Length: 145
Image 1 (cartoon, rainbow, N blue to C red):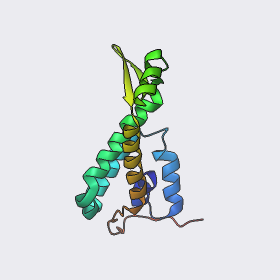
Image 2 (image 1 turned 90 degrees about the vertical axis):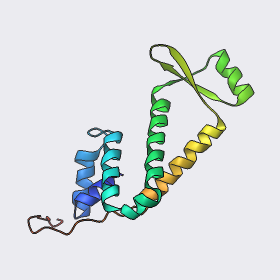
Image 3 (image 1 turned 30 degrees about the vertical axis):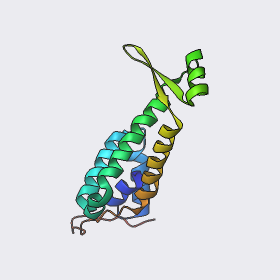
């Protein structure tokens, strides 16, 4: 997604790579912000794609992001209850600590669903073509060194 965004704004690979490194990297811009920019660009400049599967694509991205955050930031439940849940129902739990302690459970079906969504997004991103506006005479494209 970073390269798609940068590729839209940059006229050469060197500039694109530098934009990804210096501006779009995870140190600077959140995934949600990049996803929002990418969705706006796709709506404006890849209208056929957005009309066909854009809503499903971006819904999948949001779902993946939500579950990625849970898996990255919650602690795996290793209590006796969790062991029992795994043995009986083949579910794994992650503990959420907020106002109260809550276990979020994942089954094989949940994991398979997330895997399918992730593959859809992963294999679709490279196929999205963002139509660039015609170059303006005011735009300077620096040649590669």
